[in-house]
Image 1: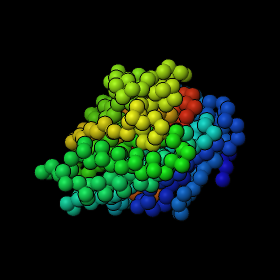
Image 2: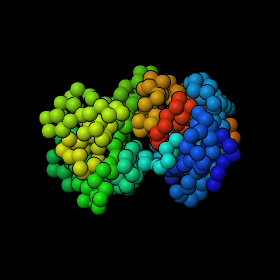
Image 3: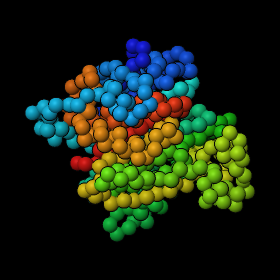
Amino acid sequence: MTSDHGKLTVTRTKNCQKMMNLTITVNGSVDGDNGNRLLRESKSSDGLTEKPLPLSTSSEENDVVSSGFVKKSRDKNEDVQISTCKTPTHGLLSVIGRRREMEDAVKVELGFMVKGGVKFDFYGVYDGHGGSRVAEECKGRLHKVLTEEIVEDNNKEECGINWGITMEKCFEKMDEEVNRKTSGEEMVGSTAVVAVVGNGKLVVANCGDSRAVLSRGGVAMALSLDHKPDRPDELERVEAAGGRVINWNGHRVLGVLATSRSIGDECLKPFVSCKPEVTVSELTDGDEFLILASDGMWDVVSNELACRVVRRCLNSRMMKREPISVVGQNQAAEAAAAVLVELAIARGSRDNISVIVVDLRN
């Protein structure tokens, strides 16, 4: 299914209990003009509707935000409709961009676990390299492995879960799973940045150079640090394990991999680690939203700019110029994810781009 020239096809589920999950791929030359190219949408579930989203030819924040969206007037029934939807508000978009292959994967699993009567939600962005296999396996399995680990874990804190230990075990098991299936794919791997929201907490685990950023009280707060080979502590760790970081078209482990931690990449162990860095934050009234994204966006959009764009979309009640009636869906969060993707393309990103925006205000 192909859109008109220079338009992005956006798909949403009609039922608020379902997540929006789509992949947009390129149709035609990879050498487009400023991202204003033909794009083809791939559906992955039933009950979807499509509408074109005009792409801006400008890389300026104001132009991109306003090009495909208009302010939404309040519907007198809107608040009632939203309050009846039991799912947290979020939006996501994952696009192939200017790459020939799609290696990113995203996952949202609302209510993936219930503990002590409390529901927990899972959000994950996986940026594959050397192929899509590991990213796709993480998408299908990592949240399940996490649930299994929590059930099996005897190291419980008095008030809940020891998230640091639990996430480390989860990522290690996921790494073991994908490496058992290498079959000549020892150079295939994926970054992983995941967030768990529940019981008044926000837990982020990161392995690689995808990133999680929280907007709290109007301030952009990075909840993860990119695992780059030239990061001083990562460089020291790689060299202590007997490896080397070589500047070959950027700093790379053994001159090969541009991230120092990942899931998979069996042939680069132990220099490339699967151990995540974990942060646990208490949610506050000042928490606005969380952004999870692959480096296809973060390489060209700063934390501060990304938060500014999302805040504008959420606060100004932005919506698509060609509205789709989706009762209970957080169209503003979906709009925010789409604008960030468009902004990254307009700013010259040549990578796959995946973005999840989680509205924490409710």
